[in-house]
Length: 543
Image 1 (cartoon, rainbow, N blue to C red):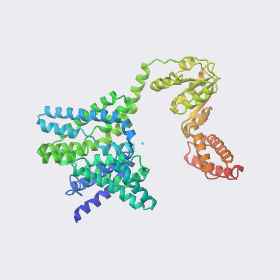
Image 2: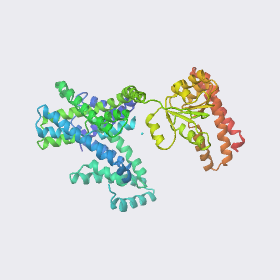
Image 3: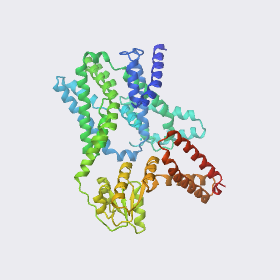
Image 4: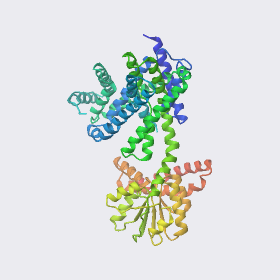
């Protein structure tokens, strides 16, 4: 028994326990926290772990295998077939394009063709572990042996309520498939992915996910720590310019290829930026393939060391790049690009002589328009998303492209003669701007507004318009159904829901003036909750 390996394992586990909450608290995410903590405890910094890093890395790679099994569980055969275009088209072109460009760039800098080709193929792969974990933080043909052996066994185990056997079965399946694939020279990760797809339509899918998830999370944490610990800061310090150039070149090449392919496959501008940022890094398989290539004499040890250091740095930078793209670049450049595209299209608003105007045709406005239309009161609809306008028109519904904050467009839509304006946009500031403009130019127009949040409801109350809190109605419908299922009489439950809704709306008026004083606001909310409990307990509908 290797005591040193156990000591290293203890250090890795302790580091994982510390890194995750600190990384999340600082807004960096758990992955970046693991990588930074791994670098600190590694041989190039504090030196708490060192000689056993390779063993820990190989062991923790099992976390990647478990992750791919869980990804497979999310896909049944029909879903996988529907995704064949993005998988084989976008994915295949990305790998092929990145491999060719990277190999050519390496050759231009004097690297021999065999090494250039090997570098291109290795560096074309992105980090599945980094991408999936980071995105999660910031939403085959089935074989007869999946079908006729494993599922009956799981049913029998579940019938006996031997839950620990279900966990053991899940782990045996993953480990067994991984070893089988490895023994025949194939990727263990690919094998477990196929096994996951095989069981995606099984009734035990969610049980398997729940059993494996804790092991996957822990092993992935150790994997990221081991990657961080493997960053050779001495090599980086000795050749900073070269490694910086390699990392920047790798990220730039992959980002450009991914962005262009995403555009070709019809992704929106914002999606293209996030997609390219998420995958513009090296992958964990570079550590395995680098050692393999050195052992076969394909790569020299010097080039392999530079490659591994660069890949580790690119993986460490990946969460930061995605974070920056999501919070800084996309909100600015993405919004500017969207506005530029919208500005290029001229509004086509007309006055249909309708009594109702509707600003916004999203999840809130859509059912309103359909309901009014079914009662012979079709509203004149204005929608700012030009792509959505085109799609809705294909469905046979009349929607005009235009910005409801522009008075000339409201006037063109007939606001001066209409009786009601329904504001169903999801931008709270835009909603209030429309209200202000209409109050000034169309004082006789009755305004009904969507309240996107409680704070928005406060602001709408203060503006004096009639508002409707989003999801309140559907929440009450769900609550009524739950009460009925527990034995409550349906009409009684509906009366209770109506009382709750009236109390909730009345509380907006009482609480709105207190928002600036946190202490008074909290005290008033507590009294409001107590009053509501007392009201419902003494209500006839609670009997």
